[in-house]
Length: 308
Image (cartoon, rainbow, N blue to C red; front, top):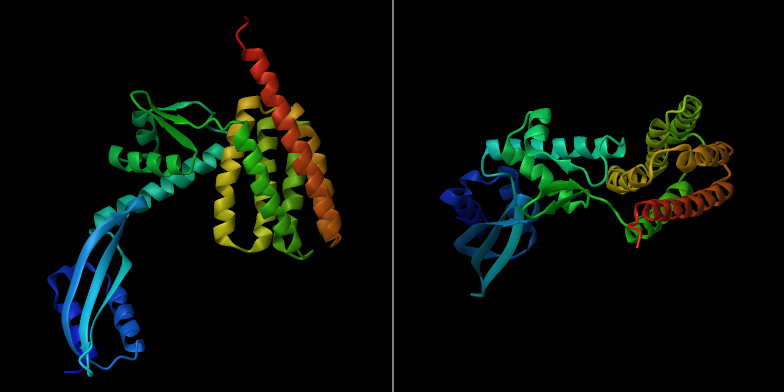
C-alpha cells in the first residue's frame, strides 16, 4: 500500500477519529500529499482533544512516518473540530444567537449601564436553559458588555472615560477607512439618508432614545461601506459600548440633537461624491461627540458627588 494511503487508512481506522469531521481528515490527507514526501510507512497517528477559549474543540495530531531514504519524521498540527455532540453544537449555536440578540438590545438602549441581570428572568425571556445562559453571559463578558461581580451576580458594564477615549480612537480609524471606500451608488449611502430622515422625525416627536438608536444605525451603515461582514460585526461591539456610555449620561436633546444635523451634512457630501468633504464632516462629528460625552460624564459625576 502507498505510504500516503497508509496514513489515510490510519486516520480513518483510529477509533478516536470517529467523531472528527470527514472534511478535516480529507484536508490533512491532501496537505500530506502536497508535502512531496515519498512515504513508505505511517508508524502512528496520535491525537488528543483539547479545549481553547470559547469552548471550541480542537485536535492535536501527530503524524509519524518514514521516507524512502530511511528518514524518520513527525509532523504536529492542531485543527479545529466540531463539537463532540450535536447537542453541544446546538447549545453553543443558541448561546451565540442569544448573545447577539442581547447585544442588539444594548445598542437599542433596552438595558442600562450598571443594571443587574437576573438569571431567572433572562433565561425565561429567551426560553433557554441556565447552562446556555451562563455561556451567553460568558460571551458578553469577554466582549466587555457585561461584568461578573463575585457573590453579587452579572451586571451590564458601565464604560468609563478611558473607554470613551479608546472607543473614539477606534471609531476614527474604522469610519475614516469606510468613507475612503465610499461610492455615491453604494446602498449604504441611501440607507444613511433614510436613517437621517427617520432621526429628524423622531427628534421632532421628542423621542430622543429613538434618535440615539437611529444615530447608532447611521454609523453602523457607514461601516457597511467597507463591504466586510467581519468588520461590521466587530463594529457592533463598539456601538454597544457607546450606547452604554450614552445611557449613563441620559438620552436627551443635549446629547443627540446637534448630531442629526451633522449626520445629514456628512451623508450629503457622500451623495455628492465629495470624499474629502465627508472626511472633514466626520472629523468634526467625532471631535464634537467625544467632547460632549466627556462633558456629560462630568456633569453626572458632579450631581452624584457626595458633599464634603
